[in-house]
Image (cartoon, rainbow, N blue to C red):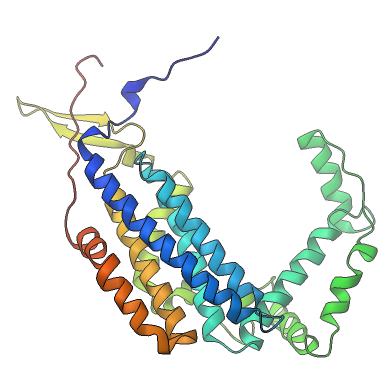
Length: 314
């Protein structure tokens, strides 16, 4: 038996189609220009074996941006809020990578990633304490038996990488930081860097954006703001009623896209400042001719207003 959706739960987008298309076009322009920049960045970072995280992080940033854009036509503001957090984190990581020396940036990233891979592979080794517990619990909870692996053999090339002469000092710093913090450190915490994402945001002058996104987004992601799915409306006789805002409620959509566009501009600006200062006029021309109208309208004007009405059938 197949079930048809209860359409009353879905907010109609008919009255805001023009605004949705406008915001969709804005992000499409950002993504198109971003892919153009990615071509430059690939050439720049391919000159050094350690710089790949810079390019891959920028691609992750564009992937988050593209995912957000795909949700705009259906006004899926809840999904966009969640993805905005991933976009913001990718932006912070990218900007910290390119603003620091290789030791504090890409090498700290590479060593931390390598350490994480080593730890993950130990979880598949029944001779390791982590592995013996994980493999048993995995089979119990998932119902699938994983073939145990020899982590010593699997990690040979990873340990060899950490023992390289140019990598050994970074790994030593990783171990020092782990001991200092008494936990596995974030890669950007090495060399006395920011301890957590909030400190990283403050360091990059994005403390306000962090508060705007995370004070609301963390509640949204963890399900602790379910009362936001309720709106209070005043009926003709003055009586107040609490109603559900339903699914795909676009009320907060423009705010989310506003923060997305600001994150994009910060990311692209830092990219040009670091690698392509002599090409800034190209960036300025793109903004002026292709993007400024979108940016000013979405960040300054109110593109639409959502009203809720009491359903007399309920």
